Length: 387
Image (cartoon, rainbow, N blue to C red; front, top):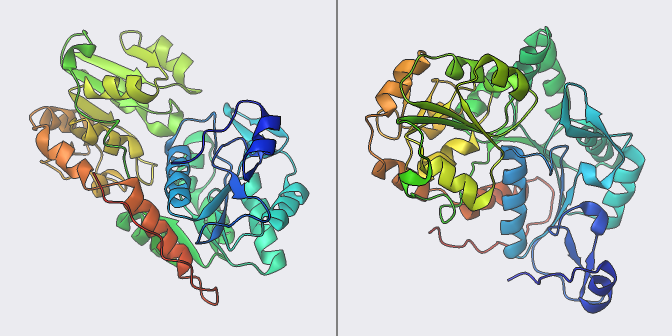
């Protein structure tokens, strides 16, 4: 069990055999103090432009991965926008962009002296970390969490060919680019990527589990979406459908005000977290995932863990998570997918989620980092059994 840090930073520094780095913005950034025994394993730097207070699959994935790797004896340090001066992203103020982070990030990476460098996003921090790796000759891996060309295309008339040229440039020097699914791996290879590896996702099945349906009292069936409320999530394709029952949107984002005006009969629940989020999801009858741009869709796993079938398009992400006709329904007509999903049983949904754990996903991540050519072999981390 990790130590519980005292509330006062001065007490933390004086009473614990760790250096706590408060500028990191996360208790995951705990490293051994000089003169104390370091845990066996690797020192892993993960650089990400996506971090709290954002609520999305990238933040969840990195948080859970760092937690599991720290528990297995590795020393993980997350370098996030909370370490730097920040400005709000145009059209999406919830996302904070680091302002000119290069020099400060270089010094922080030098101080941490990682054995492995992983770059999670293509924003200002990711670009600065890429430059650091190329300048110092340090090998690095990257990950591809969002279908960046399609994401940009949903927001601006930018040709996807231009965007693919950028992501090939960004990820090209990486020894390996990690994606969550086999379909996404094939897609990147078809678009000119050369070294693409798999790093799947997990779900906390002790938190996301079946609950009492009466937690929500609206008219049945309850059709639910949970996640960021943004244009690239395709919510209009769901909310514009003529379906019986109640449509629920759990989450927030820049598209919410316009959707409230256009679809006033929808229940907008705002952000929910932890047990409250799990109870909302478990009270639905079908989880609707209308996005065509996600590389995975972590919320689908959370819904399945609650015993809720998924309705989605047959695109990368859903085709890798949902077993059509068993744990959900995939169709180009989203209304047809919802209708078919309503007839499915909860038990296979839960069973499919129980086969996935963050411990297994994190082992896959560390195995990819361990395969860096010319790097010393890391300690073999212990894998906790899936529950």
